[in-house]
Image (cartoon, rainbow, N blue to C red; front, side, top):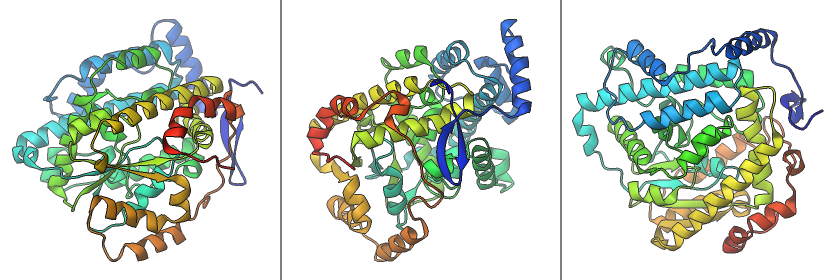
Length: 426
């Protein structure tokens, strides 16, 4: 087996990395797509203007609101087309993803135009879980979102935050069904994702789907395909417009359904920009041994991105990308925290969360002064009983699969480990 090629298959509910070809239909389409690309053509038109025109035609709407998304969209698509080596399925899925974000923008702008008082909604003292993936963020989010008094981002809202006005007028809302169909498709093409990262259409989702609407967000598109030109361009860009647009979407969602405060999960760690957009935000940071975090993320990287976008996967590229991406984000977060109001931050170690999840949630509420609902302990106990770890199987991976080793990871993250006194895990 070559290191650069993987496919993920389920074997008795345990994940392993194996070479496995695309289904026959997609292999045939890939042959056609490869032939057309050599002629400078494609089965799928990835032109930004074409996708925008399709969103306008399908929605019947034409007001984009702020148009600062067009340049990042153009650079992203050029990078995808020229550098990512997408096969037919990859192009199709990314086209659909970008089209969906553009369609959403048109609906978002139309809803705000029709209801300008939406922008008067105050997002007060939101609670963000702001740490890197694979550190217990999803578990903590699920537990915090058991509070019946708070507001969280439903997965179906994250996919389609604003209804088309004609559907709103007819009181037709099929967003939950659409989200369930999407999850079914994801599990069909990458069934191991439900082992590595469990999701539900009616459960809480992270902020990333909302931040994507400006196409100015780190740590996302490069997790799906190699896009170095886009990544290099993004480094020097102001991320605040993305967070302000994200805040605007939250205002829409809150206008329809309120809670005592928002509980949100923001995994890309741009805390400086987050605090500019949400000055009174409270931030919980989860911490775990990077030797466990980085290989776990690499495996999820491969499962959720590369498996869906091509049979050939460069495992060493994944390892190097993850290793460098998160050390930079974590060190920047450390500097932001030192320069900020310490009362807005609370640290949770993965070990403490796993050993005492109920107590950890209570401590977070006490620290920030949120009202702790009396039903929380019962809800948490019941949720944990129904959602045991490894319920759907074991997520297996090694650092060596991605060209990494424990000593290299620990050395690269030495400042972060020392800053938070993070213990080694067995």
